[in-house]
Image (cartoon, rainbow, N blue to C red; front, side, top):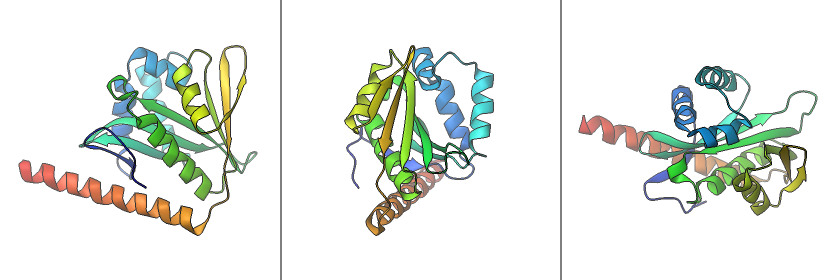
Length: 190
């Protein structure tokens, strides 16, 4: 699946050992983007603990990379044993990369991962004033319900098919090859 992204940008899964890239991305978010991502103001210490916890919760994280630097992320987290076929999605994109299709590409990849893992319902929560996330959710036919200070978007997922599984495997293979070529290029320059 070819996505239209800013020049030099690629969407790929984070691999084992790349937690620091996700942490650095979240810590670079401007105050408004960080507030939107976490539905409130959070400290750097909170972010560090949150990212460390994420790696232990069977979360699938996709990143938007330009070179070796992550500038956007999408997190898919199972909601737990009480809600076995439900997951939560959260997206963050650094300010200079917003309005360039990065959020759409990240959500598209997250929806594919959710489908292939058997999640039938995907929840996305955001602040009521986060119009950008609401537009993104609507773009993917999410049903939005408005609460006092927040909005919940819900997307129903199709069942996995051999084609959807192949699409994810091809995307993962392409992401891995791109990461290895980028690493090799940086090592040759050094």
